[in-house]
Amino acid sequence: MLCSWRAQPDDAGRLSMFDRKLRPALRPNALYYLRILALSTVMLWMPMSLFFGAVFRRSEYIHRTDIEIVDLDQGLVGRQISQSALLLAAAAPDQQAQPKWRIRNDLTTLAATRDWVRHHGWAALVINSGASDRLADAVSGNPNTVYNPADAATLIFNTGRHPIIELSYIQPALTAIARRAQMEFSVGFTRQLQGSNQISAIPAQNIVTLATQAVAFRIVDAAPLSFAIAPILYLFSFLVGQLCVIGALIAWKMASFSFFLKVQHTHVWLGAVSVVLVWSTYIGMLSALAISAFRGPSYSRFALPYTVGRFFSLWFTTAMVLSAGGMWLMSWFAILTPELLALASLSLVLPNVASTLTAVETAPRFFRWFYALPFYNGSMLYRYILSGGFPRIGLNVGVVLGELYLWVFMLWFTTLVRQYTVIRGISDVPGWYRGSIFFASPVPYYKDKDKIEPEPETESFEEGTIPITDSADDATSFREGNLGV
View 1: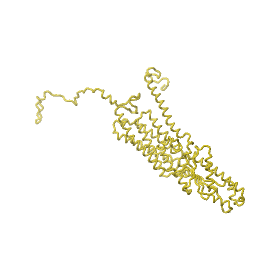
View 2: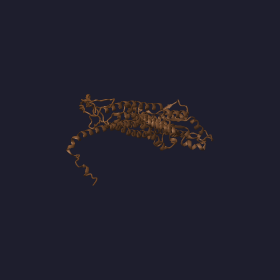
View 3: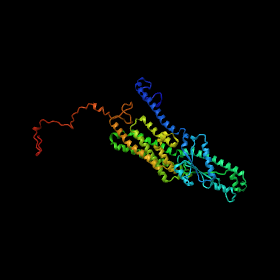
View 4: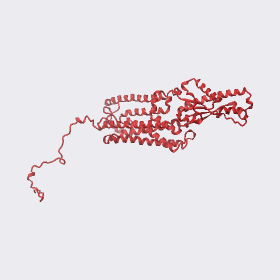
């Protein structure tokens, strides 16, 4: 039998795992794996605590967001709906889990309000200009008037600012308050009509509308980003791309030992930088192609059209974000032992993932440092490219490029440390340091070189000289060619 778990032909003379002779070798390894277990616990708890702390009980911080009430009507409809919305919001049972409502008087048109929400806001309830006049005209008995209650108000959202927060909290809160305010106004208006003699003068085409729904609203998305995978599109683009970059960095670490021995430090450093930049650019292209393959040339009304310009914008945004994270990882990978590579990776990936799943406004104040993370700034750029909402281009690009340049400099320092330890026999190929049970460097320790006694020189007939004692007796003539023979 060629294969059997009971007996292999090549096992003759090998030890069993229960043999006492293995105990001296197993004991230090067992202690080391206990250390790995403790380290793994830290690696799990620390990043996961950051992750869950950022997204846990997120609704308690929704009160840091704002919904604007803009009364463009300045009449009966605008006044009653505005006051009703404020009273309903104030009567909500859990104020911490509700956005703040405030009246804005500096916005004078619907277009200006929509533009302001797209650039700066979360949402707005707008009572359209002339709403009271249209309602009064419908009640007056003009037979040529066709009343549309949806012309009374407009709900403006901004899913491009943050789809998860907008779709989960802002839109439900605004829609619920607007519907209740609309219902209260319609019920009161219907009772008023029933108690007056005006109902008989209302044209037939308007009587049913006014009796059931005196006012309604339209919904407008100032920066649409509400297609199916919008909340996780940028997250998975960065997460999967960063994991692919991590694989390339680990391969570089394991294969760069001979470079540190034979190549100048500046060239090793530039090579490491090139690995990160080239690989990140390639992964960024694949990410942009994947988005294009999923949605095609257009996102219809749920986002802006997917043009060639947006394709390249997503490509280089992804490349920039992955390069910043890759430089951070490469800087640590150069000097960390293999057991700590996962800790460095998790410390980068999980906080960055958490920063894309929640808005910093809806997280505890401790997590304000999310503003400096590559994924956070990259996700804001993604949302702007696809929707045009909440533009902070200069800030986002500046933060990511600043981190990229910072970690390029740090990589110069850590590769210098790595080369120093490799040449002096302090660090081996995988990155274990002298003193570890796994350390096995082919380079002798620099302090041991002084203790090695030099070997005695041996005579070499090729390199040495042979003394000739009777050279004076030789009759040599260079002119006649006589060699004394």
